[in-house]
Amino acid sequence: MRKAILVALLLLGFTTACGADKTPNAPDAGGLNLTGAWVGPIVVDNTETRMSWNLTQVNQVVNGPVTVLLSNGIVLMNGFLTSTLSGMTLTYTISVGNGGVPSRPACAGQLAGTMTITVGPTSTLSGPMGVSSSNCTPPFDTSTITLTRQ
Image (spheres, one colour):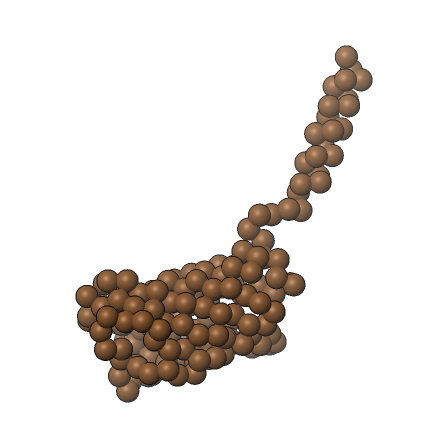
């Protein structure tokens, strides 16, 4: 009886230890981890604003909410980013639903682009962003944006 209990405890400990290093939500993209806040300037209607991406990464899939704010904190846009990581490139789409642009609640659309990732003391995401679809006149054209990890 004692032998059976000891064997069961050893097996339980072995299976627990073997599975301990496998976290299903851990990024596995060659050590690259984009999870966190990324912020940078963007010009909207000739006014400099702040774009913020709050990203979560699982393997090569990176998602998260996106906001564009005026310096006084007024929200110009809320959206949701979905993207795929390939090497040092992030190809993304930001979907903005009805109500996502508070000043134009009936507007909806998508922004899209490809960011180049630079890792260092100041990590950045940089690349073009353009309107890929919209049911109203967008407040900006295609532009290059640079977001810095916070």
